Length: 110
Image (cartoon, rainbow, N blue to C red):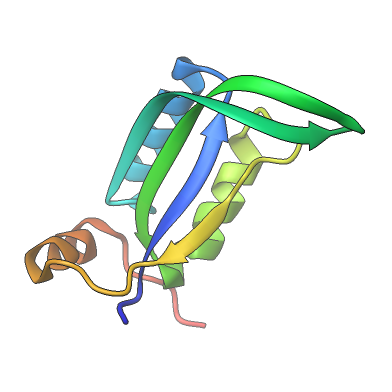
């Protein structure tokens, strides 16, 4: 098991997806952010089923940076309740995982 994670988030527009992706990479909270579009999301919100076109962010980061990444997304996101979920990267190409390490800022000590 590695300390690397993939974080998923969605947003409503291409402009917001680009703005969020650039900010996370610029702040070195993410080594890479893929923007996948369009995706179609179905969910219940305020008692009604919603059907929305969204832009999916696939964010490569690390467990020690999850909290600042989450806080950044939640503070600048247009959604009242943005999706911010992380899944572990169990294994990966050693060269790719090393590249992620080089591109991320060092985690602050706990």
